[in-house]
Length: 480
Image (cartoon, rainbow, N blue to C red; front, side):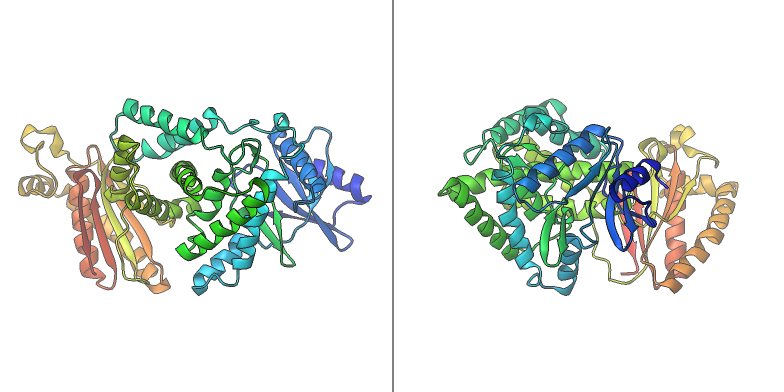
């Protein structure tokens, strides 16, 4: 049991909790517990970042005074390491959105989504009234530093790990020009509250009413960032007609605070913030998914890149030609392509790769399968006559097979992988990865991947075998 939360609960209610159930948290390091006693419950929160905890508590109290729908703070420890807040239940708006998307109609959640747009304008303007921005965490204002943090998050956590070659100086020049233009987007308010992570997973629904959570990173800033975050959230995948309705709803709410809006200016400035937010999200997906290996972020990478590709192709950013070029090349990388596999069938991806360039990423979120090291076998790459050849060429194949070592190696792998594929087929699973690595991803790994793919396609015709020689830029698909 969490001692400090228990003590705070006892101070508040005069008794220890009967139960404490840990809830699924967000991407942060905070811990949430549903604490129950005497038939009622509240939410206990523990967080190591005391400044962040303090910011949430102070914002929640400020918004409550403004009659904005946020959880009531019931008790706080003196050092802000733990606090107890109102229990809003378990229904996230994102869950309802997911359900609507699967049903093929957003009609059931459209009133709630429109309500979010009306609420956003209230938080931005009413929420900013009387707010001491200096007390916010990690900073008081969305400024040049904030923008560069977002852009560099994308550069260092997604663009560089992608392996794409680019001119960092040229990209920085356009980063700085983009940042300057973003900072000038303040016609409709500079002293407004920027929620920072305003999207459907940070909205709860209780008895048909909306409640806002996770606003602790808020700061002073322009109106567009939150609007772009919500409407163009990749995982929500709102259809164009829903997005149009939500923007119109927001504009009507905005005009109650600022008067008549110049829609040409509004849409041009929103477009810039949509680009910034898309890049920031890709940085987050790269960090949380590729680096921290969190499945829900990995599976979002391909849809996020598809959305970015559609966005930059629909109306290219001619004012940032090098950034446009880099994004076009990034979204066209074969590693991020998503072949149209027939639904419901098992796809076995068989890779060859170089350990020097890292193990292939699994963007399915499955996380299952094998990585085999071929470097224990005889290496043709040590001989000049084979250095320009690959494991697909006859002289290399003969070299590898002459002593039989790699053949025996593969026999052991067949005996491991075959039962795995068979069981996945029986259970209806749809993804499995088998990767072969060697020093350069050129000879031994290519030979092994090629032979395993051929073996599996013959043994399991009901499966799809996707062969990828990553370092050679060669792909083949069997079974479609």
